[in-house]
Amino acid sequence: MTVPAPPLSSRLVNVAEDAELRLVSLLGEHSSGLNVAQCEACISNGDAVQLLQLILSDKESIPALVTQVQDVEEAVGSFTLLVALISSAYNDQDTAATQAAVAALGKSVVQAGGATEAACSRKLRLLAVIYNLRAPVMDKVGILRQMVTVAGNFPLVFLRARDPLGNLLVTEDEAEDDGATESSGSGSTV
Image (cartoon, rainbow, N blue to C red; front, side, top):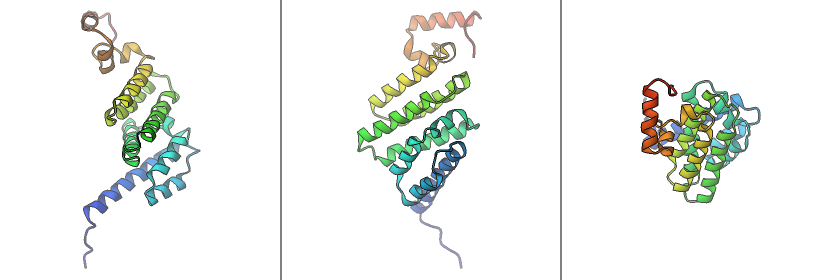
């Protein structure tokens, strides 16, 4: 006797739950303050708002994605899930709550330890996730401000005229000057 496959919607719910459990497991590995059992209960009960509150209130969880999770792609993927959870948990109806959660997430990234070039690069990747997944202009302006602040730690690396943030900050004349300087060998290199 074969058991019929669950409906597609059930399979999608299972995939989402598995991803959330992996997120909690990853954060729990790097945070002594995160109550993993309570987070797992939130996932089982479908309580995304409480799950987010637990993760965002833990002072070690978000910094762990910046400085402790070795695999950059895993950190970015986990962070992407967290941003998507914020949007779905509040259904973008309670804009004040959504904006507060997004602001808290961005602030946690910016304030995370690590002022090295690698840490700043990872912070910029995480902030770019928020920027790309959020539609409201005010969210984007706040995130851009945070990105420029982080990039300012290494302006010759992250704020060059040919880079995405640098394009926002320099005029065409400055970009041409930057290109001429870099092609002559006296400019900054990656």
